[in-house]
Image (cartoon, rainbow, N blue to C red; front, side, top):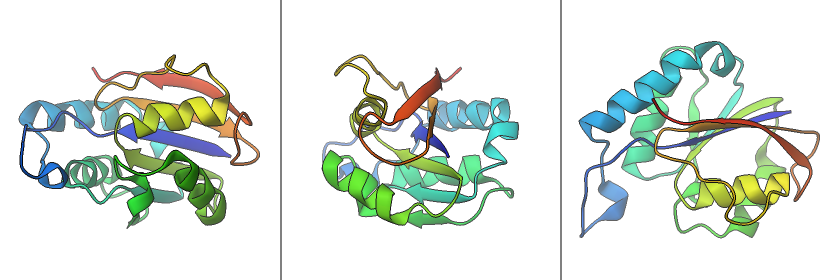
Length: 152
């Protein structure tokens, strides 16, 4: 199984409503560049899960284009989601061989670390970066981190 993990692009600042923060113009460009440079790999995606926050939704829309399946919005990919809940939900909900997750820091880095067994604090996902994990099962220390591609 392949699990792609995508962090949203750069977002506009807001001190009042974090969930409503939209992508900045830079963020849109970052995400489009990520989508363009990974189009072949992402074309294999069969299932998409995305955080309910606006910037993640916008990121998902750009990457999905006309090729990927409809995304399922899930609260277990929101920035304040508990990592153990995210792993449990992934284990229960993934029904395909190639999955895309669109979420936020620090959840994306922590998720990669727990699934791959990487040292805590060793993974950092910059905005619009994409990671690939390969695994036979969704569980701690069972995945191989194949690569992380930072935004361009």
